[in-house]
Length: 215
Image (tube, rainbow, N blue to C red; front, top):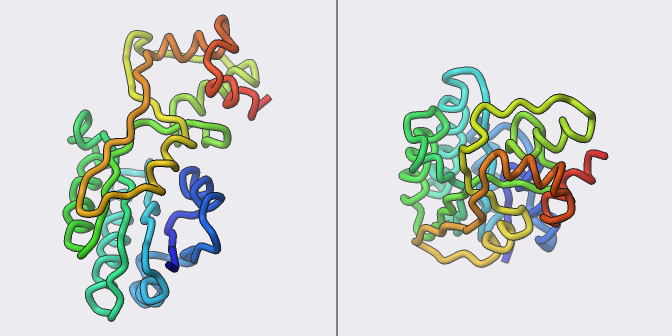
């Protein structure tokens, strides 16, 4: 099976790449339909991870919908019908009016027009190599703490579900087609995350690994 991946340079994508054998990595602009179509023709399975997480207002919609639309259209206009595994988000449920949550919900509808699809609704992902101020609050906290930068916590009691990157990749490698998957993490408050990185350092091994990455 020839496996392709979009977004291979991102945090999740780079970790997934390390677990795939000779993957076909998409290169170029996914808004260019011809390049997308050539890529699709080569693949039996596609992990679609490409997309903006944060950007100026309107940019996530413009970029991500065009990219995902081109990917699905390419499958319809070629002889290939690859399996598509899509990285979605739980923000669809808890933050549906955000641009990111709204766009992901529309992308899910596009992906479900494929013959074989699997959609993963992913909570907050963390792990060594996460991009501060972009991928997750844990990446931001660990970056700041490692550099003695003051950490500002708006709501210490606010809770989020966090999944470690290795656990998420395990889920990607075991897709169930024409189904939604909900990779499970752990619920932590912002104050708990901070404590595990400071006064309770060492009591949470995966958070400790994240801090060590920046030290």
